[in-house]
Length: 366
Image 1: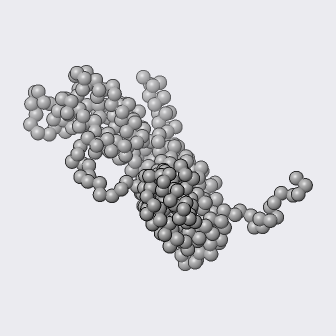
Image 2 (image 1 turned 180 degrees about the vertical axis):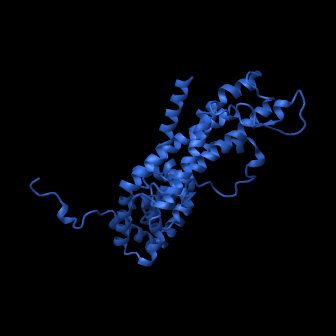
Image 3 (image 1 turned 90 degrees about the vertical axis):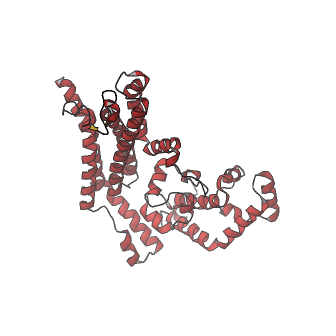
């Protein structure tokens, strides 16, 4: 028993120390690189010095200390609950009886139900392991800000709370849920820990699962077209989460985002951000039909700017898009020509990493 407890403590320390260690190494060795990149953007784009104050480095020591400390406390409490619960005398959560207690309804009137500690712990573990991968990705991209640790803490709390509600709702509806009491008990004791781990890894999907099965929690009507960021080629889950931190939840938001604040606040290159913005503008005009345009070689709105009337007719015949929709989009693009030209120039100058491009050419005798 003592050997098992020692092994649990070792596993807990290995998992819990990841957060303070990554923050320490980033702050000491890698943070300065991001500061150099931001200063380079200021210099190349000739940004007003007064405007630069709004983007001063937020990674000051005191902010970092509070963020990492809070995340470490939340993570340690959750991991201790999972790994050392029995050793600490917390086999189960303290149950509160609600309503009138009877001999036949004792289990159903208690909250939380038995097994909640293990289920919540597994959800916490799933969310935490996902968070470690996210922290490592942000570390590699030199984008490990204090907000990352606050976001991870909130994700851990959200995952644990979501699974606690779902599990207790299931056990109550299944008719009690003590271990071994029929199919509901078997589901609660064997399947729910694994299910909780998966929901903890993707808590938003757990909430979506709940809203799909409870109409009262779902929106009554969908008055607007869905506009997920994943519609833009190149944006994956981690990228959408990063953009959502800045209030960019849909490709509508990305299409109208200001380029300079976006490049200053994210680790993405100028060319990548510009490509995403131009793709998002195309998605705004055509929605899901943008897939048809991509099959014809059109990825951004700039590809539509120089189409001739005959080419528009051909494109309308080869896709599900109408001629009027294509003409309207082309006219809108032409009205935005000045903004698009600014984006093109910004991407060109920020994408150059040498002072004299001519001198960087290979020698003629190579």
